[in-house]
Length: 294
Image (cartoon, rainbow, N blue to C red; front, side, top):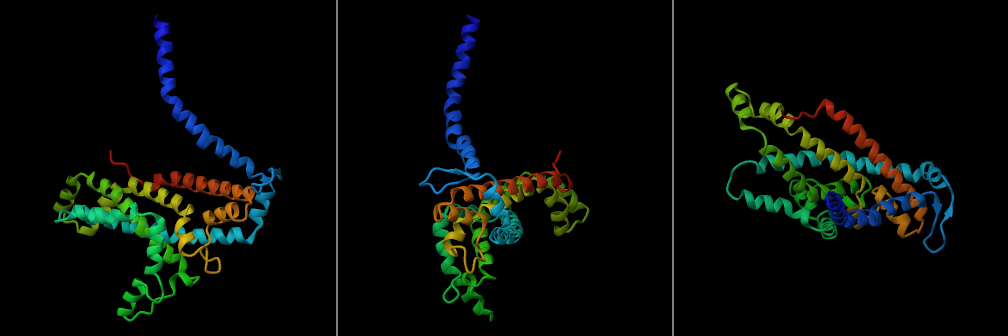
């Protein structure tokens, strides 16, 4: 009877796990394995896939376009990640204060997160319009001639970064806010007794104690940066002169416009390896600057 109950329990557990396992196999593991196989083939969707071995990877790594796209993606990361960290932490510090209507401000800052990238990108195309855009109008009021943002190869990427920070800052600010509320106020009281200035409190108490959250936000932001696509596709379409072509944009173009599925799959796996290596490096380096309380 004990054996029968054990079998029944295992059957019940298997029944509950089956939907998740089947879903993982059908929609994750099998597509991943299929994409890896396709990266070694030449396939245009209409004809059967032809095995070409490492040709896609050799062409990819030897092309000038790939390294230009990598530079563009690197530029986006260098601009986006620090600005995101500073802006989201500043918003969190603001929302951590007690003042009337703080709940309303939390909702307002989080609204862009709920906005679709299609709507958000169209809004920012108008905001950054070099003739009628709000940004250049405000710059004009202080005597500064605004650039042609999305039409200038030097300013198009910063324009996309501004839109991205606007979209994501509210989400990461709430994460930082949770970390700030978890700091024991006795630390600040002790620092106040010792005569510490607000800057010293922030530098020596707040920053070390939110470093685990900063680490998480940094990794997440970098991964998101490598996967930037929607705002590029809608705001600049990869232009001007290829200045905003990034890895995800190239994957989309090669897969669904040029129908080079094998090449697009190879590019996807190169992206996966790059993200994996950078994440592993960050994980190793965290020991030098991430502090866990207790």
